[in-house]
Every structure is written in C-alpha cells, then in structure tokens.
Image (cartoon, rainbow, N blue to C red; front, side, top):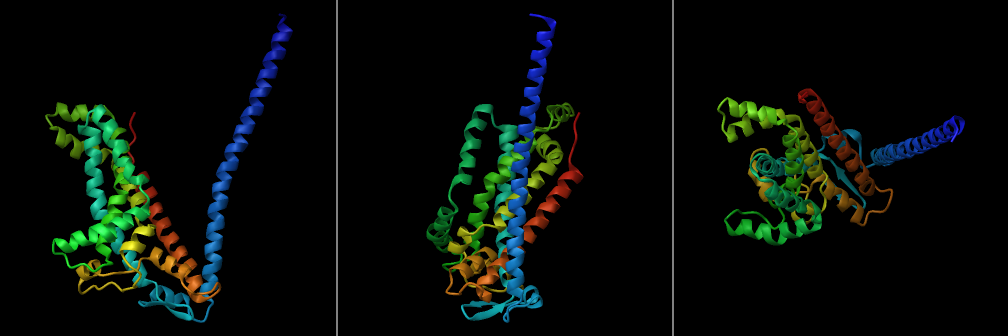
Amino acid sequence: MSERSIDVDLTRASSGQVVKERIYKWLLFACAALTVFVTAAIIYTLATDAIAFFMTEDASVAGFFTGTEWIARSDGGTFGVWPLVTATLTITFVSALVAVPTGVAAAVYLSEYASDRMRSILKPSLEILAGIPTVVYGYLALVYLTPALQWIGIPVSTFNLLSASIMVGIMIIPMVSSLSEDAMSSVPDSLRQAGYGMGATKYEVSTGIVIPAAISGIFSSFILALSRAIGETMIVVMAAGLRPRMFNFANPLDNLLSSGQPMTAGMVSAVTSDATGGSATYLSMFALGLTLFVITFMMNLASDYVASRYQEEYQ
C-alpha cells in the first residue's frame, strides 16, 4: 500500500470521527436543551395561571402571602397560604428528625463498619424502600401506623401530621443514607490511616474525620431528601387529612396530633373539587405549585452554596 493511500484512509477515518463527534455533541445538546425547555415551560405555566389566580375577585397577592385562613369552595373562598405552609414545614421538620439521624447512621455503618459482602446485601435492600409507591406508604400510615400510635397511648386523630411525618421520614431514609454513604466512601483512606496512627478508635475516626470530611455531600443529601419530603403528595393526602389548620404556636404538639393540609394536599383538593376551570379555587392550585417551586428552589440554592463552601479537595 502506497503512502498516499494510507494518508487518504487516515483522512477518511479522521473525517468520519469528526462527523460522529459532531452528532454526539448535538445529540447531547438537544437532551440538555430539552430539560431546560421543560423547566421553563413548567415555570411559565405556573406563573401564568398564578397571575390569573391573583387577578380573581377572591384572591390577592397580599391576602395570599399574609392570610392565616384557607377556605377553598367551588364558588370562591378565602386563600391565605400560611396554614398550608406551616403544615408542610411541620411535616418536613419532623420527617427530617426521623430520616437524618437514621440515614447518617446507616451510611456510617455501610461506609466504615460493614464488610464488602454485607454492604452488597444491605445497600440494595435499603434502597428498595425508595422503590415502594408512595400510595403504599400512605396506606400503611393510615391503617397501621396511626392505630399503633393510638395503641401505645399517643392521642392522635385518625388523620394527623405525626403519622404522615414519620412515614415521609421513612420514605426518604434511602436517599439520605445512599448519598451520604457515597460521600463518605469518597473520603481518601489516607485520612483514616492518619487517624488510626494517632491512636483514634474506629468510632472516633468515623465521627471526627470521615463525617467532617464528607460534610458537603452529606448536607446535600439532606437538602435533596427534604426537597423530596416537601413535594410528597400521596402520603400526606392519605394520612394527614384535608383540613387546613393554622399552626398553633401556643401548643406545638397539638399540631402533630391533629389533622392538617400541606400544600400538596391543597393542590390535590383544588383539582379534585367541584370547582370549574378558571375559578379561584381551581387556579389556586397553580399559585400553590409556584410557591412550592420557589421554596424547593431556594433550598437547592442553599444546598449548592453549602456544598461549594465546605467542599473538600484531595490530591
């Protein structure tokens, strides 16, 4: 084969490779652009219908964001978002008390104590919880968890925020544990060996070296899990009830023992009511969705800031 023919073959191969790379580039760009387009379309839809909601006779921006009473009827009502916001934040806070310690403890065990064989069994088993439909969690909370709480002497009503919070916390445990375990596993072994060389025990290395070194990833898992808890729908609809109640600051425990209506449950109630399209009650679903979107977005911004602020870099 002549030198010229070899050059021609190489040129053809190089040209074909360039064409393939361009195809891959534009295909990946299309996928990225599609995600941006879908997000922008969702924001546009929520904002457009939320503005239409605030232009109705029964709603106003000031009344929505400062009102403490939510009464949604087919012919109108009173739309103050704070009873729904406080119920949502209550469930999120209590679910965090359930999921964060349990998830981090499970992550520490999987990362620092479990053998490779044990980890290969426990981690997939734990992540099975993430695949259970949320309607099943809601059914378990209503039919089994609430009667169990009543049986041990906790005076919860049939629909209550406590059962919903516990079940939401159980649901997000796999998210906390899996992401935290990945963050801990990425910590270099040299840091662990340095701790052992200083005479530290495994517990001291785990809590004093590994967790602080992986804190940015662990905190990101918290925010991601709590964002998932804020947007949970079926569990809170089935277990928490559909009665909007303003948070009782004089008796905080009473809020957990009684029913409430989180924001997602309020959206379900609006879309499944007898309200016609274009009414204030129907359009309130979009105002609630936009408010929920903003809350979640702010939490994700906080997560990104903390992750970048405390991220450790290793050589």
